[in-house]
Amino acid sequence: MTELSREINDAVGAIRKTTDMIPQVAIILGTGLGRLVQSIDIKATISYKEIPNFPLSTVESHEGRLIFGYLSGKSVVCMQGRFHYYEGYGMKEVTFPVRVMKKLGADILIVSNATGGLNPLFERGDVMLITDHINFLPENPLRGKNDESLGPRFPDMLEVYSRDFIKLAEGVALQEKIPVRKGVYISLQGPCFETPAEYRMLRILGADAVGMSTVPEAIAARHMGMKVLGISIITDMGLPDIQEPVSHEIVIKAAEEAEPKLTKLVTAFVKAL
Ligand code: HPA
Image (tube, rainbow, N blue to C red; front, side, top):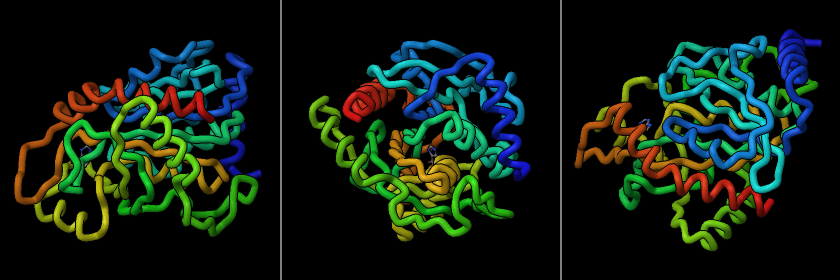
């Protein structure tokens, strides 16, 4: 058994002392997007501090706990607070919780984030279904010795974000009257926001939105064969020629304002699964 598998098993073992729930769906909540938890019929809560090998969240707006319960009648495990590369964690740490949630039983990952819009047709507060991503982080979470029990050495990345899920999410969004955009998400390491020249470059590269997360977790999830739905909330616009200041506070405020749309969409999506 590899060191990583041993660490995952230790974490799962510790969690199993608190709950024997088998989650169908794993949910990762991004910056300012933690309120979805209020819609979960909570059965167990475990602080990251109590889970061996789990990193600890350093961003203030992130709570740092795993929540087990039912959403729309389906069993879910939800990460309230996630780990970012810019915090200083390695990719193995950033993706560790996804691996644990898969090992707990979740075959589906719903991942959300706060993101800067690059597509000029987008607006602050928009919901974007992620159709694909560009990994612009300096590292790949699968670098190093591969654990064959988790997934293949060279996993394909043709459909990181399930087309079926995108179709399903578009359907429920229409029913719930939530306008949704679709687009490509590019992840940079941060923590500084981009320069106008960088926003222009990222748009030329083919991205519709830019952020500092999600890509590592989505890669690890696909490595393990999970089906992924990715949802971005546009919290600011990165338009090189119409620059408005952006800050962590602005991002949180915009994410919190748009959050009810995310809760509604995810709740309806999980119900439709
Ligand atoms: N850039 C990078 N990450 C972000 C942004 C942005 O403009 N907004 C929210 N997260």
